[in-house]
Length: 461
Image (cartoon, rainbow, N blue to C red; front, top):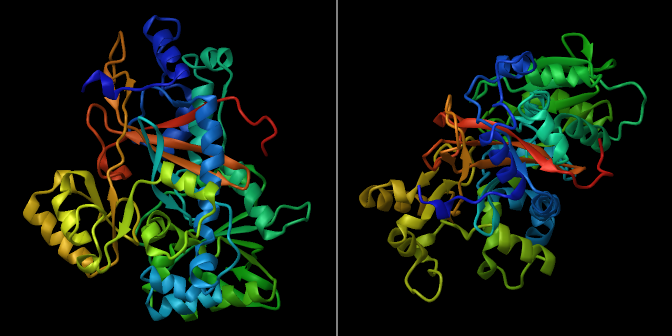
């Protein structure tokens, strides 16, 4: 890989120099401090954490909460506050989707995970996940292990490095949005759907919540009952339902109305709260990103100047493919958007508007022209977006077992959390010496945690 594609900030370069010069030993994931994280997450670890310098952390702390608030403002700004019209525009047309939104919608919740790559000019957003079913909030446990590793402890102290732990920041957001004022911690039920498209190991998540003082119940939505004793699951009283299922799963289940009724009744009577409401998932649709990106789709720009500056700087060009064969191509080329997408395969990505874990994402530069043309035709009749490839820079890492200078390169994919406190930690993943094009953890990625140079000393803990 050419050297001009490698770009690292000052603290990262300092760590690599110290590590190569023998000032610090390599990190040792066999140490006891890693044991709990490694028993939960067994994928290979990167040789070091990713590090944000103070300017990067400060900018992300500004940009990501602003982007989340802007996404959450779309129903009011583009649909007159009509959430059902907003949902239909995103492709949620199932009867169960409409019923579920009427039962369990609520105000916007400051919780999300931005998926980004770092390019030559800064971070670029490729997705924004906005459901309470976010994965990998447990990575604060890896940060604690790394901070206690002799290979990093001294360097972190010398360079004033710290980390944000997503779990307590998420928990504080949960209490705040639920309006919980009692001294006693509420009982939280982690509630899944009766069927789930993915299997999630929630053991560490449960342990970390319990260590924060929350009594925990684990159940499915079918276990919930509402009566004189409030909302219960198998006889245990529940104060807050932490929703671990996706709105997509609900929308596709014809029995959703009946299954949601006890929870909906409990929320309507003030007997329980739900975190987060079902409409939170709407803002994670890729079509929302197209609504932000496509200024030609609106008579007047729905964004403020500050919002527009951040969107144009952070979000790659993104367009809806719905009806793209009749939509004008970006000027000055002429023709239709579909023709433009076919002709610029090498720089574009097709994504289903509604999806998770990278499923259905197709990179044009990895696809033969005939197959790409067929995908474009199908996308014109469905709910897909096309997004310009976000150019990324690489960082250097030590290959497993390697001594001497760091010679492996990695194009990191960053998952950074947002809570009511702002930027709230995250994780990175990537493939050594190979660019990661389809971004999900099933691709054999190495993973790592995120540290930052000290900023915002008054942040919520």
